[in-house]
Image (cartoon, rainbow, N blue to C red; front, side, top):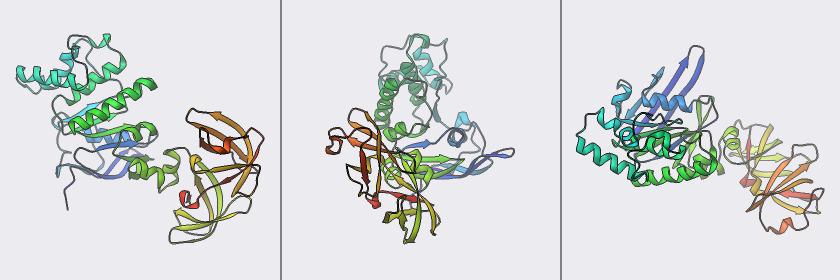
Length: 357
Protein backbone atom coordinates (compact mmCIF):
# COMPACT_ATOMS: atom_id res chain seq x y z
CA UNK A 1 0.00 0.00 0.00
CA UNK A 2 1.39 3.42 -0.99
CA UNK A 3 2.06 5.74 1.94
CA UNK A 4 -0.02 8.92 1.89
CA UNK A 5 1.88 12.20 1.57
CA UNK A 6 -0.24 13.86 4.29
CA UNK A 7 -2.47 11.90 6.67
CA UNK A 8 -4.98 13.32 9.14
CA UNK A 9 -5.89 10.62 11.62
CA UNK A 10 -8.89 10.90 13.97
CA UNK A 11 -8.35 14.57 14.81
CA UNK A 12 -10.57 15.80 17.63
CA UNK A 13 -10.69 19.24 19.24
CA UNK A 14 -12.67 20.03 22.39
CA UNK A 15 -13.16 23.42 24.04
CA UNK A 16 -14.68 22.67 27.43
CA UNK A 17 -18.18 21.27 26.75
CA UNK A 18 -17.98 22.11 23.03
CA UNK A 19 -16.59 19.65 20.48
CA UNK A 20 -15.35 21.72 17.54
CA UNK A 21 -13.88 18.82 15.51
CA UNK A 22 -14.72 15.13 15.82
CA UNK A 23 -12.83 12.23 14.20
CA UNK A 24 -11.59 14.09 11.11
CA UNK A 25 -9.68 11.54 9.02
CA UNK A 26 -8.36 11.81 5.45
CA UNK A 27 -5.34 11.20 3.23
CA UNK A 28 -4.04 13.90 0.89
CA UNK A 29 -1.79 13.06 -2.03
CA UNK A 30 1.36 14.99 -2.87
CA UNK A 31 0.49 17.86 -5.21
CA UNK A 32 -3.25 17.56 -4.52
CA UNK A 33 -5.58 20.55 -4.13
CA UNK A 34 -7.92 19.63 -1.27
CA UNK A 35 -10.63 22.04 -0.13
CA UNK A 36 -12.36 22.03 3.24
CA UNK A 37 -15.90 23.26 2.49
CA UNK A 38 -18.65 23.99 4.97
CA UNK A 39 -20.63 26.68 6.79
CA UNK A 40 -19.24 28.81 9.60
CA UNK A 41 -18.57 26.77 12.73
CA UNK A 42 -18.34 23.44 10.90
CA UNK A 43 -14.74 22.75 12.01
CA UNK A 44 -12.88 23.38 8.76
CA UNK A 45 -10.68 26.27 9.97
CA UNK A 46 -10.00 24.57 13.30
CA UNK A 47 -8.70 21.54 11.39
CA UNK A 48 -6.50 23.80 9.27
CA UNK A 49 -5.06 25.56 12.35
CA UNK A 50 -4.21 22.21 13.90
CA UNK A 51 -2.36 21.31 10.70
CA UNK A 52 -0.48 24.61 10.87
CA UNK A 53 0.46 24.04 14.52
CA UNK A 54 -1.47 27.05 15.81
CA UNK A 55 -3.67 24.77 17.92
CA UNK A 56 -3.11 21.37 19.51
CA UNK A 57 -5.67 18.61 18.94
CA UNK A 58 -7.41 16.96 21.88
CA UNK A 59 -6.84 13.63 20.16
CA UNK A 60 -5.56 12.20 16.88
CA UNK A 61 -2.41 12.63 14.80
CA UNK A 62 -1.09 14.28 11.64
CA UNK A 63 1.55 12.55 9.54
CA UNK A 64 3.66 14.20 6.85
CA UNK A 65 5.52 11.66 4.72
CA UNK A 66 4.73 9.05 7.36
CA UNK A 67 6.07 11.01 10.36
CA UNK A 68 4.01 12.76 13.01
CA UNK A 69 4.38 16.55 13.04
CA UNK A 70 2.34 17.27 16.19
CA UNK A 71 5.45 17.68 18.36
CA UNK A 72 7.02 20.06 15.81
CA UNK A 73 6.45 23.78 16.56
CA UNK A 74 4.48 25.66 13.91
CA UNK A 75 7.48 27.73 12.76
CA UNK A 76 9.49 24.56 12.12
CA UNK A 77 6.84 22.64 10.16
CA UNK A 78 7.77 24.46 6.92
CA UNK A 79 4.09 24.80 6.07
CA UNK A 80 3.05 27.92 4.16
CA UNK A 81 -0.02 29.84 5.28
CA UNK A 82 -2.20 32.44 3.53
CA UNK A 83 -4.90 34.20 5.54
CA UNK A 84 -8.01 36.19 4.67
CA UNK A 85 -6.53 39.54 5.75
CA UNK A 86 -3.15 39.25 3.98
CA UNK A 87 -1.12 39.95 7.22
CA UNK A 88 1.55 41.88 5.34
CA UNK A 89 4.00 44.08 7.25
CA UNK A 90 2.92 47.65 6.35
CA UNK A 91 6.34 49.18 7.04
CA UNK A 92 8.14 46.76 4.71
CA UNK A 93 8.22 46.87 0.92
CA UNK A 94 6.74 44.11 -1.23
CA UNK A 95 10.19 42.62 -1.74
CA UNK A 96 11.00 42.74 1.97
CA UNK A 97 7.64 41.12 2.84
CA UNK A 98 8.31 38.25 0.46
CA UNK A 99 11.90 37.91 1.69
CA UNK A 100 10.89 37.72 5.35
CA UNK A 101 10.52 33.89 5.61
CA UNK A 102 13.96 33.47 4.02
CA UNK A 103 15.63 36.02 6.30
CA UNK A 104 14.40 34.32 9.47
CA UNK A 105 15.80 31.08 8.02
CA UNK A 106 19.12 32.91 7.55
CA UNK A 107 19.41 32.17 3.85
CA UNK A 108 22.24 33.85 1.88
CA UNK A 109 21.45 37.25 0.39
CA UNK A 110 22.04 36.08 -3.18
CA UNK A 111 19.57 33.21 -2.68
CA UNK A 112 17.03 35.58 -1.13
CA UNK A 113 17.23 37.95 -4.09
CA UNK A 114 16.82 35.12 -6.59
CA UNK A 115 13.89 33.52 -4.77
CA UNK A 116 12.05 36.80 -4.20
CA UNK A 117 12.38 37.62 -7.89
CA UNK A 118 11.09 34.17 -8.88
CA UNK A 119 8.19 34.31 -6.39
CA UNK A 120 7.02 37.73 -7.61
CA UNK A 121 7.26 36.54 -11.20
CA UNK A 122 5.12 33.52 -10.28
CA UNK A 123 2.33 35.79 -8.97
CA UNK A 124 2.85 38.28 -11.82
CA UNK A 125 4.08 41.16 -9.69
CA UNK A 126 7.49 41.77 -11.26
CA UNK A 127 8.60 45.35 -10.73
CA UNK A 128 6.58 45.79 -7.50
CA UNK A 129 9.54 45.04 -5.17
CA UNK A 130 9.87 48.57 -3.78
CA UNK A 131 6.19 49.40 -3.28
CA UNK A 132 4.58 49.44 0.15
CA UNK A 133 1.44 47.30 0.73
CA UNK A 134 -0.72 50.40 1.23
CA UNK A 135 -0.17 51.31 -2.42
CA UNK A 136 -1.50 47.97 -3.66
CA UNK A 137 -5.05 46.81 -4.40
CA UNK A 138 -6.60 44.03 -2.34
CA UNK A 139 -5.92 41.51 -5.09
CA UNK A 140 -2.29 42.59 -5.36
CA UNK A 141 -1.83 42.34 -1.60
CA UNK A 142 -3.17 38.81 -1.65
CA UNK A 143 -0.72 37.94 -4.44
CA UNK A 144 2.13 39.25 -2.26
CA UNK A 145 0.89 37.09 0.63
CA UNK A 146 0.83 34.10 -1.71
CA UNK A 147 4.38 34.83 -2.95
CA UNK A 148 5.60 35.11 0.65
CA UNK A 149 4.02 31.76 1.55
CA UNK A 150 5.61 30.03 -1.46
CA UNK A 151 9.06 31.66 -1.50
CA UNK A 152 10.75 28.99 0.65
CA UNK A 153 9.17 26.07 -1.26
CA UNK A 154 7.03 24.59 1.54
CA UNK A 155 5.75 21.04 0.99
CA UNK A 156 2.23 22.10 2.02
CA UNK A 157 0.36 25.40 1.57
CA UNK A 158 -2.63 26.17 3.80
CA UNK A 159 -5.13 28.84 2.74
CA UNK A 160 -7.87 30.05 5.10
CA UNK A 161 -10.68 31.88 3.24
CA UNK A 162 -8.04 33.94 1.38
CA UNK A 163 -10.44 35.57 -1.10
CA UNK A 164 -13.51 36.31 1.02
CA UNK A 165 -12.60 40.01 1.39
CA UNK A 166 -12.47 40.55 -2.39
CA UNK A 167 -15.30 41.47 -4.75
CA UNK A 168 -16.73 38.81 -7.08
CA UNK A 169 -14.84 39.78 -10.24
CA UNK A 170 -11.48 40.06 -8.46
CA UNK A 171 -12.16 36.86 -6.52
CA UNK A 172 -12.68 34.94 -9.76
CA UNK A 173 -9.49 36.45 -11.20
CA UNK A 174 -7.40 35.38 -8.19
CA UNK A 175 -9.03 31.93 -8.21
CA UNK A 176 -7.69 31.46 -11.73
CA UNK A 177 -4.25 32.61 -10.58
CA UNK A 178 -4.24 30.22 -7.60
CA UNK A 179 -5.16 27.33 -9.89
CA UNK A 180 -2.41 28.32 -12.33
CA UNK A 181 0.18 28.59 -9.54
CA UNK A 182 -0.85 25.20 -8.19
CA UNK A 183 -0.40 23.63 -11.61
CA UNK A 184 2.98 25.31 -12.15
CA UNK A 185 4.47 24.56 -8.71
CA UNK A 186 2.84 21.23 -7.81
CA UNK A 187 2.59 22.32 -4.17
CA UNK A 188 0.06 20.47 -2.00
CA UNK A 189 -2.74 22.90 -1.08
CA UNK A 190 -5.33 22.65 1.67
CA UNK A 191 -7.89 25.40 1.17
CA UNK A 192 -10.74 26.52 3.45
CA UNK A 193 -13.88 28.17 2.10
CA UNK A 194 -17.63 28.36 2.68
CA UNK A 195 -18.19 29.17 -1.01
CA UNK A 196 -19.24 26.06 -2.95
CA UNK A 197 -18.56 27.65 -6.34
CA UNK A 198 -15.02 28.53 -5.27
CA UNK A 199 -14.47 24.97 -4.07
CA UNK A 200 -15.73 23.54 -7.36
CA UNK A 201 -13.52 25.88 -9.42
CA UNK A 202 -10.29 25.15 -7.58
CA UNK A 203 -10.26 21.68 -6.09
CA UNK A 204 -9.10 18.23 -7.05
CA UNK A 205 -11.19 16.94 -4.14
CA UNK A 206 -13.49 18.52 -1.57
CA UNK A 207 -14.09 17.53 2.06
CA UNK A 208 -17.55 18.71 3.13
CA UNK A 209 -17.66 19.61 6.83
CA UNK A 210 -20.80 19.69 8.96
CA UNK A 211 -20.99 20.17 12.74
CA UNK A 212 -17.32 19.32 13.27
CA UNK A 213 -17.30 16.17 11.15
CA UNK A 214 -16.67 15.29 7.52
CA UNK A 215 -19.89 14.30 5.79
CA UNK A 216 -18.29 13.26 2.50
CA UNK A 217 -15.07 13.56 0.50
CA UNK A 218 -14.98 13.47 -3.29
CA UNK A 219 -14.46 15.38 -6.50
CA UNK A 220 -16.92 18.14 -7.35
CA UNK A 221 -18.80 15.98 -9.89
CA UNK A 222 -18.95 13.07 -7.42
CA UNK A 223 -20.40 15.22 -4.63
CA UNK A 224 -22.91 16.85 -6.97
CA UNK A 225 -24.10 13.69 -8.72
CA UNK A 226 -23.87 11.25 -5.79
CA UNK A 227 -24.30 13.00 -2.42
CA UNK A 228 -24.47 10.53 0.45
CA UNK A 229 -26.19 12.84 2.98
CA UNK A 230 -28.97 15.39 2.79
CA UNK A 231 -26.56 18.05 4.02
CA UNK A 232 -24.12 17.48 1.15
CA UNK A 233 -27.02 17.38 -1.32
CA UNK A 234 -28.22 20.76 -0.10
CA UNK A 235 -24.81 22.38 0.24
CA UNK A 236 -23.36 21.42 -3.17
CA UNK A 237 -25.35 22.91 -6.03
CA UNK A 238 -28.96 24.09 -6.22
CA UNK A 239 -31.52 21.71 -4.77
CA UNK A 240 -35.22 21.02 -4.39
CA UNK A 241 -36.33 18.78 -1.52
CA UNK A 242 -39.77 17.16 -1.52
CA UNK A 243 -41.26 15.04 1.26
CA UNK A 244 -42.28 11.61 -0.03
CA UNK A 245 -43.35 8.24 1.35
CA UNK A 246 -41.12 5.16 1.03
CA UNK A 247 -43.39 2.42 -0.34
CA UNK A 248 -40.64 -0.21 -0.61
CA UNK A 249 -36.84 -0.40 -0.68
CA UNK A 250 -34.26 -2.93 -1.81
CA UNK A 251 -30.53 -2.92 -2.63
CA UNK A 252 -30.14 0.79 -2.01
CA UNK A 253 -33.08 1.79 -4.22
CA UNK A 254 -36.50 3.03 -3.15
CA UNK A 255 -40.01 3.14 -4.49
CA UNK A 256 -41.54 6.47 -3.50
CA UNK A 257 -45.05 7.86 -3.41
CA UNK A 258 -44.95 11.55 -4.32
CA UNK A 259 -47.42 14.26 -3.30
CA UNK A 260 -50.44 13.72 -5.54
CA UNK A 261 -50.11 9.94 -5.42
CA UNK A 262 -47.71 9.26 -8.34
CA UNK A 263 -45.30 6.39 -7.53
CA UNK A 264 -41.72 6.41 -8.86
CA UNK A 265 -39.31 3.49 -8.69
CA UNK A 266 -35.52 3.11 -8.66
CA UNK A 267 -34.60 6.20 -6.61
CA UNK A 268 -31.14 5.88 -4.93
CA UNK A 269 -31.78 5.69 -1.18
CA UNK A 270 -29.46 6.96 1.56
CA UNK A 271 -29.84 6.41 5.26
CA UNK A 272 -31.87 3.91 7.22
CA UNK A 273 -33.67 1.57 4.82
CA UNK A 274 -37.24 1.30 6.03
CA UNK A 275 -40.74 2.33 5.16
CA UNK A 276 -41.63 5.85 6.23
CA UNK A 277 -40.90 9.39 5.15
CA UNK A 278 -38.01 10.42 2.93
CA UNK A 279 -36.68 13.67 1.51
CA UNK A 280 -36.42 13.52 -2.27
CA UNK A 281 -33.69 15.60 -3.96
CA UNK A 282 -34.42 17.02 -7.41
CA UNK A 283 -31.77 19.13 -9.15
CA UNK A 284 -33.36 22.12 -10.97
CA UNK A 285 -31.65 21.34 -14.30
CA UNK A 286 -32.78 17.68 -14.23
CA UNK A 287 -36.50 18.55 -14.30
CA UNK A 288 -38.39 18.64 -17.60
CA UNK A 289 -41.34 20.99 -18.01
CA UNK A 290 -44.33 20.65 -20.30
CA UNK A 291 -46.99 23.32 -20.51
CA UNK A 292 -50.71 22.69 -20.74
CA UNK A 293 -50.65 19.10 -19.47
CA UNK A 294 -51.04 17.49 -16.07
CA UNK A 295 -49.67 14.02 -16.80
CA UNK A 296 -46.18 14.40 -15.28
CA UNK A 297 -44.88 13.02 -12.01
CA UNK A 298 -45.59 16.42 -10.44
CA UNK A 299 -47.86 19.24 -11.58
CA UNK A 300 -48.12 22.90 -10.69
CA UNK A 301 -48.51 26.51 -11.74
CA UNK A 302 -45.72 28.75 -12.99
CA UNK A 303 -45.27 31.66 -10.58
CA UNK A 304 -42.12 33.35 -11.87
CA UNK A 305 -39.72 33.26 -14.82
CA UNK A 306 -36.27 34.87 -14.51
CA UNK A 307 -33.73 35.38 -17.28
CA UNK A 308 -30.21 34.52 -16.06
CA UNK A 309 -28.24 34.73 -19.30
CA UNK A 310 -27.42 31.23 -20.47
CA UNK A 311 -30.32 29.70 -18.56
CA UNK A 312 -33.85 30.54 -17.44
CA UNK A 313 -35.08 30.05 -13.89
CA UNK A 314 -38.71 28.95 -13.63
CA UNK A 315 -40.43 28.81 -10.25
CA UNK A 316 -43.32 26.33 -10.19
CA UNK A 317 -45.80 26.06 -7.35
CA UNK A 318 -47.36 22.59 -6.95
CA UNK A 319 -50.46 22.18 -4.86
CA UNK A 320 -49.76 21.60 -1.17
CA UNK A 321 -45.92 21.60 -1.26
CA UNK A 322 -43.12 24.16 -1.42
CA UNK A 323 -42.32 25.85 -4.76
CA UNK A 324 -39.95 23.96 -7.07
CA UNK A 325 -37.05 25.59 -8.87
CA UNK A 326 -36.48 24.54 -12.50
CA UNK A 327 -33.60 25.65 -14.76
CA UNK A 328 -33.86 25.43 -18.52
CA UNK A 329 -31.23 26.38 -21.13
CA UNK A 330 -31.86 29.65 -22.94
CA UNK A 331 -33.92 28.88 -26.05
CA UNK A 332 -35.32 25.58 -24.71
CA UNK A 333 -38.50 24.54 -26.54
CA UNK A 334 -40.41 24.22 -23.25
CA UNK A 335 -40.15 27.99 -22.76
CA UNK A 336 -42.35 28.71 -25.77
CA UNK A 337 -45.61 30.20 -24.54
CA UNK A 338 -44.62 29.79 -20.88
CA UNK A 339 -45.73 32.61 -18.58
CA UNK A 340 -46.80 33.11 -14.96
CA UNK A 341 -50.08 31.30 -14.38
CA UNK A 342 -49.38 28.54 -16.92
CA UNK A 343 -50.27 25.03 -15.74
CA UNK A 344 -47.31 22.67 -16.24
CA UNK A 345 -46.24 19.10 -15.58
CA UNK A 346 -42.77 18.24 -14.22
CA UNK A 347 -40.95 15.01 -15.04
CA UNK A 348 -37.60 13.59 -13.95
CA UNK A 349 -35.53 10.42 -14.22
CA UNK A 350 -35.69 8.65 -10.82
CA UNK A 351 -32.11 7.43 -11.27
CA UNK A 352 -30.93 11.08 -11.34
CA UNK A 353 -32.62 11.90 -8.04
CA UNK A 354 -31.79 10.86 -4.45
CA UNK A 355 -33.86 10.05 -1.38
CA UNK A 356 -32.61 10.66 2.17
CA UNK A 357 -34.14 9.07 5.24
